[in-house]
Image 1 (spheres, rainbow, N blue to C red):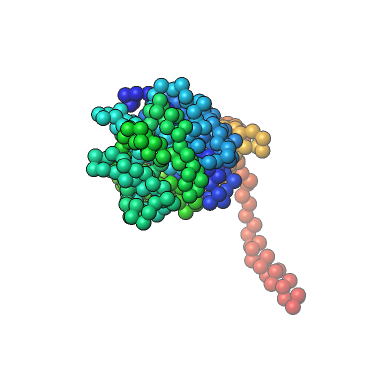
Image 2: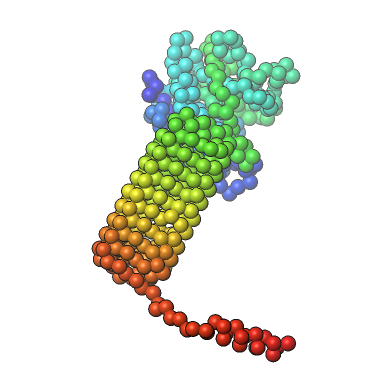
Length: 452
């Protein structure tokens, strides 16, 4: 927590036309979470007293997304620049007695630690009126430039469109993020004009206005990846790639082995234990917890699942939401598990679908087995007891219970409960007709010759 209460004001009014999408730009996901969700999570972790999003085009989508997170909403219409956008939050925050952290919905990966540094500097020694987050990109492109002294004091901030050739040669760029005390912000914004090339009200102008009034602002720097903005699908992919690379490094630093790191895809909330072996092309969707010592074989897809210590998954396995794989259990190749619990040491090694089921410890599910959990209207549950053996190519029609130690013969369709230690077989009786195949072939040869 920072020493003073603060409000987070997130600008998300842009149309995002370069995304060419019906989905609002700030709702496009990074690592399975909307951009705006990343920011809300970070400011919640930091302890924001208030949260406000300024929306514009497509605001209904944004409002629906933020509603569960206790975020207030203001609207910018028309859109007249960043200073004008921030001003739309004044009605909601004018009585707020604290600091205001200004963020951008399409700059989603700002770390909590960096936000904290901004707020701490705002309230540190020789407290400035505003703290600006700067960065030095490999290619400054069209970013606004910051003219600063060695101690961080800002002499001026220039939008690229208004900068001279000499000013454009400066590599310290403005990310747009700021921290300002609420008591100063609204006063300074009221003095911002639009006498510039674009005819817009620029937020950085408050630095110049404050300096004219004898108040200083300072810049602190962040890494370029922390303030990467997203305006197109290509930029979205680039930020996703950066996030994934950092997450892979973190996983390995925490004790997991990634044989081909560049092929493993994490979600924002993936939890990986120690001594986990992850083979190539494993994909994690949201809400996955992997215990210690787990092996995840190649081309497995895992989402909404828990895999407990010592278990083995794949290759080519799919774990769907609600899958809970017990200690030392095995889910093999081309096995799909949904909303099912596997006990310790239970196995489904090949080509099976297990949905809405409870599988007891050390039970063995034969190849090609399916739990028939859906009748077209409702879902039903299958229970398989400890040590039970289900023969290959069996269909278990739920609701049904297979008792502890029971055996189901291969090829069976089981529609009634099987008691413990019993054997159940439900299939057609095998018949043999000697010589029938030879007679059939001869008859077919004659028939075929007659058609020529």
